[in-house]
Length: 121
Length: 121
Picture 1 (tube, rainbow over the protein chains, first blue to last red):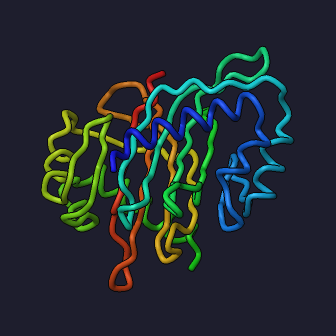
Picture 2: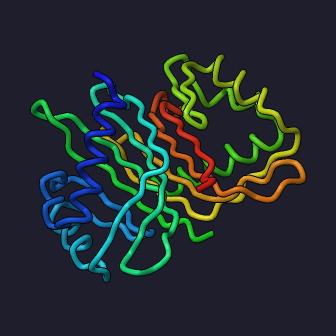
Protein backbone atom coordinates (compact mmCIF):
# COMPACT_ATOMS: atom_id res chain seq x y z
CA UNK A 1 0.00 0.00 0.00
CA UNK A 2 1.12 3.58 -0.61
CA UNK A 3 0.73 5.19 2.79
CA UNK A 4 1.13 8.70 1.36
CA UNK A 5 -1.80 8.24 -1.02
CA UNK A 6 -4.02 6.85 1.73
CA UNK A 7 -2.96 9.59 4.13
CA UNK A 8 -3.70 12.30 1.54
CA UNK A 9 -7.17 10.88 0.80
CA UNK A 10 -7.90 10.56 4.48
CA UNK A 11 -6.77 14.05 5.51
CA UNK A 12 -8.50 15.69 2.51
CA UNK A 13 -11.76 13.98 3.51
CA UNK A 14 -11.30 14.59 7.23
CA UNK A 15 -10.61 18.32 7.08
CA UNK A 16 -13.19 18.97 4.37
CA UNK A 17 -15.83 17.16 6.45
CA UNK A 18 -14.65 18.99 9.58
CA UNK A 19 -15.34 22.27 7.81
CA UNK A 20 -18.67 21.27 6.27
CA UNK A 21 -20.47 19.05 8.83
CA UNK A 22 -18.48 17.75 11.81
CA UNK A 23 -21.22 15.23 12.75
CA UNK A 24 -20.30 13.26 9.61
CA UNK A 25 -16.88 12.47 11.13
CA UNK A 26 -18.65 9.78 13.18
CA UNK A 27 -18.12 7.41 10.25
CA UNK A 28 -14.34 7.51 10.87
CA UNK A 29 -14.37 6.52 14.57
CA UNK A 30 -15.38 3.40 16.53
CA UNK A 31 -16.21 2.66 20.18
CA UNK A 32 -12.50 2.00 20.92
CA UNK A 33 -11.25 5.20 19.23
CA UNK A 34 -9.37 7.75 21.33
CA UNK A 35 -9.17 11.50 20.88
CA UNK A 36 -6.94 13.77 22.94
CA UNK A 37 -8.12 17.32 22.20
CA UNK A 38 -5.94 20.02 23.75
CA UNK A 39 -5.00 17.59 26.55
CA UNK A 40 -8.55 16.37 27.21
CA UNK A 41 -8.94 12.61 26.75
CA UNK A 42 -12.11 11.35 25.08
CA UNK A 43 -13.02 7.71 24.37
CA UNK A 44 -15.39 6.33 21.76
CA UNK A 45 -17.17 7.55 18.65
CA UNK A 46 -20.17 8.99 20.51
CA UNK A 47 -18.17 11.12 22.97
CA UNK A 48 -15.70 12.16 20.24
CA UNK A 49 -18.43 13.39 17.90
CA UNK A 50 -20.17 15.19 20.77
CA UNK A 51 -16.86 16.98 21.52
CA UNK A 52 -16.22 17.88 17.89
CA UNK A 53 -19.75 19.13 17.19
CA UNK A 54 -19.91 21.29 20.32
CA UNK A 55 -16.62 23.14 19.78
CA UNK A 56 -17.43 26.83 20.14
CA UNK A 57 -17.12 28.02 16.58
CA UNK A 58 -19.31 28.06 13.51
CA UNK A 59 -16.87 28.52 10.62
CA UNK A 60 -13.67 26.47 10.71
CA UNK A 61 -11.03 25.69 8.12
CA UNK A 62 -7.78 23.71 8.28
CA UNK A 63 -4.86 24.67 6.10
CA UNK A 64 -2.46 21.73 5.90
CA UNK A 65 1.21 22.77 5.60
CA UNK A 66 2.99 19.41 6.12
CA UNK A 67 1.69 15.85 6.07
CA UNK A 68 3.91 12.84 6.78
CA UNK A 69 2.83 9.20 6.78
CA UNK A 70 4.50 5.93 7.77
CA UNK A 71 3.31 2.34 7.91
CA UNK A 72 2.67 1.49 11.53
CA UNK A 73 3.02 -1.73 13.47
CA UNK A 74 1.66 -4.07 12.16
CA UNK A 75 2.24 -2.61 8.73
CA UNK A 76 -1.37 -2.78 7.57
CA UNK A 77 -1.95 0.30 9.73
CA UNK A 78 -0.53 3.79 9.29
CA UNK A 79 0.42 6.89 11.21
CA UNK A 80 -0.25 10.33 9.78
CA UNK A 81 1.25 13.50 11.24
CA UNK A 82 -0.12 16.87 10.12
CA UNK A 83 0.96 20.43 10.85
CA UNK A 84 -0.83 23.50 9.61
CA UNK A 85 -3.11 26.39 10.52
CA UNK A 86 -6.61 26.40 11.96
CA UNK A 87 -8.77 29.34 10.90
CA UNK A 88 -11.76 29.81 13.17
CA UNK A 89 -14.53 32.28 12.36
CA UNK A 90 -12.89 35.67 11.74
CA UNK A 91 -9.85 35.05 13.99
CA UNK A 92 -6.24 34.91 12.84
CA UNK A 93 -5.03 31.41 11.83
CA UNK A 94 -3.47 29.42 14.70
CA UNK A 95 -0.76 26.78 14.11
CA UNK A 96 -1.87 23.25 15.00
CA UNK A 97 -0.46 19.73 14.94
CA UNK A 98 -2.51 16.55 14.73
CA UNK A 99 -1.63 12.86 14.68
CA UNK A 100 -3.87 10.08 13.39
CA UNK A 101 -3.29 6.36 13.80
CA UNK A 102 -5.40 4.63 11.16
CA UNK A 103 -6.18 0.96 11.73
CA UNK A 104 -7.23 -1.23 8.81
CA UNK A 105 -10.46 -3.18 9.02
CA UNK A 106 -12.72 -4.63 6.31
CA UNK A 107 -10.66 -3.14 3.46
CA UNK A 108 -10.92 0.29 4.98
CA UNK A 109 -9.43 2.34 7.84
CA UNK A 110 -10.78 3.87 11.00
CA UNK A 111 -9.20 6.32 13.43
CA UNK A 112 -7.82 4.47 16.44
CA UNK A 113 -5.71 7.34 17.84
CA UNK A 114 -6.25 11.06 17.30
CA UNK A 115 -4.20 13.72 19.10
CA UNK A 116 -4.85 17.40 18.40
CA UNK A 117 -2.93 20.41 19.72
CA UNK A 118 -2.88 24.09 18.97
CA UNK A 119 0.71 25.37 18.97
CA UNK A 120 0.24 28.54 20.93
CA UNK A 121 3.87 28.55 22.13
CA UNK B 1 0.31 0.50 32.10
CA UNK B 2 0.26 4.27 32.57
CA UNK B 3 1.08 5.60 29.13
CA UNK B 4 1.70 9.12 30.44
CA UNK B 5 4.39 7.92 32.84
CA UNK B 6 6.12 5.86 30.15
CA UNK B 7 5.86 8.72 27.66
CA UNK B 8 7.34 11.18 30.16
CA UNK B 9 10.27 8.85 30.97
CA UNK B 10 10.86 8.23 27.29
CA UNK B 11 10.77 11.86 26.14
CA UNK B 12 12.92 13.04 29.09
CA UNK B 13 15.53 10.44 28.17
CA UNK B 14 15.24 11.03 24.43
CA UNK B 15 15.65 14.82 24.46
CA UNK B 16 18.32 14.79 27.14
CA UNK B 17 20.33 12.24 25.14
CA UNK B 18 19.70 14.22 21.95
CA UNK B 19 21.30 17.23 23.63
CA UNK B 20 24.21 15.37 25.20
CA UNK B 21 25.29 12.67 22.74
CA UNK B 22 23.02 11.88 19.80
CA UNK B 23 24.92 8.67 18.95
CA UNK B 24 23.49 7.13 22.15
CA UNK B 25 20.00 7.30 20.62
CA UNK B 26 20.93 4.14 18.68
CA UNK B 27 19.74 2.12 21.68
CA UNK B 28 16.15 3.28 21.03
CA UNK B 29 15.87 2.19 17.38
CA UNK B 30 15.96 -1.14 15.50
CA UNK B 31 16.54 -2.21 11.90
CA UNK B 32 12.79 -1.83 11.18
CA UNK B 33 12.50 1.65 12.75
CA UNK B 34 11.39 4.56 10.56
CA UNK B 35 12.27 8.23 10.88
CA UNK B 36 10.77 10.98 8.75
CA UNK B 37 12.91 14.07 9.36
CA UNK B 38 11.58 17.22 7.73
CA UNK B 39 9.98 15.07 5.03
CA UNK B 40 13.04 12.85 4.42
CA UNK B 41 12.34 9.15 5.00
CA UNK B 42 15.04 7.12 6.72
CA UNK B 43 14.88 3.41 7.55
CA UNK B 44 16.78 1.49 10.21
CA UNK B 45 18.84 2.25 13.28
CA UNK B 46 22.11 2.73 11.39
CA UNK B 47 20.79 5.26 8.85
CA UNK B 48 18.74 7.04 11.54
CA UNK B 49 21.71 7.52 13.84
CA UNK B 50 23.86 8.65 10.92
CA UNK B 51 21.22 11.28 10.10
CA UNK B 52 20.86 12.44 13.70
CA UNK B 53 24.58 12.65 14.37
CA UNK B 54 25.35 14.57 11.17
CA UNK B 55 22.73 17.30 11.63
CA UNK B 56 24.56 20.59 11.14
CA UNK B 57 24.59 21.93 14.68
CA UNK B 58 26.71 21.45 17.76
CA UNK B 59 24.53 22.68 20.62
CA UNK B 60 20.87 21.62 20.59
CA UNK B 61 18.14 21.71 23.20
CA UNK B 62 14.46 20.72 23.08
CA UNK B 63 11.94 22.56 25.22
CA UNK B 64 8.80 20.42 25.49
CA UNK B 65 5.59 22.47 25.73
CA UNK B 66 2.93 19.75 25.32
CA UNK B 67 3.16 15.96 25.50
CA UNK B 68 0.18 13.68 24.87
CA UNK B 69 0.19 9.88 24.99
CA UNK B 70 -2.34 7.20 24.12
CA UNK B 71 -2.22 3.41 24.11
CA UNK B 72 -1.86 2.31 20.50
CA UNK B 73 -3.13 -0.74 18.66
CA UNK B 74 -2.50 -3.32 20.07
CA UNK B 75 -2.60 -1.65 23.45
CA UNK B 76 0.81 -2.83 24.63
CA UNK B 77 2.23 -0.09 22.37
CA UNK B 78 1.87 3.66 22.68
CA UNK B 79 1.82 6.85 20.65
CA UNK B 80 3.44 10.01 21.96
CA UNK B 81 2.89 13.42 20.40
CA UNK B 82 5.16 16.30 21.41
CA UNK B 83 5.14 19.99 20.57
CA UNK B 84 7.73 22.47 21.73
CA UNK B 85 10.72 24.53 20.73
CA UNK B 86 14.08 23.53 19.31
CA UNK B 87 16.99 25.74 20.27
CA UNK B 88 20.00 25.28 18.00
CA UNK B 89 23.35 26.89 18.74
CA UNK B 90 22.74 30.64 19.22
CA UNK B 91 19.63 30.81 17.00
CA UNK B 92 16.13 31.76 18.14
CA UNK B 93 13.99 28.79 19.28
CA UNK B 94 11.93 27.23 16.46
CA UNK B 95 8.59 25.48 17.13
CA UNK B 96 8.62 21.75 16.36
CA UNK B 97 6.27 18.79 16.52
CA UNK B 98 7.34 15.16 16.84
CA UNK B 99 5.45 11.87 17.00
CA UNK B 100 6.82 8.61 18.38
CA UNK B 101 5.21 5.21 18.10
CA UNK B 102 6.75 3.04 20.81
CA UNK B 103 6.46 -0.72 20.37
CA UNK B 104 6.85 -3.02 23.34
CA UNK B 105 9.40 -5.81 23.22
CA UNK B 106 11.15 -7.76 26.01
CA UNK B 107 9.62 -5.65 28.80
CA UNK B 108 10.85 -2.48 27.15
CA UNK B 109 9.99 -0.21 24.23
CA UNK B 110 11.70 0.78 21.03
CA UNK B 111 10.87 3.49 18.51
CA UNK B 112 9.01 2.03 15.54
CA UNK B 113 7.78 5.33 14.04
CA UNK B 114 9.36 8.76 14.46
CA UNK B 115 8.14 11.83 12.57
CA UNK B 116 9.80 15.19 13.15
CA UNK B 117 8.81 18.58 11.73
CA UNK B 118 9.81 22.14 12.35
CA UNK B 119 6.74 24.38 12.29
CA UNK B 120 8.08 27.22 10.22
CA UNK B 121 4.61 28.25 9.01
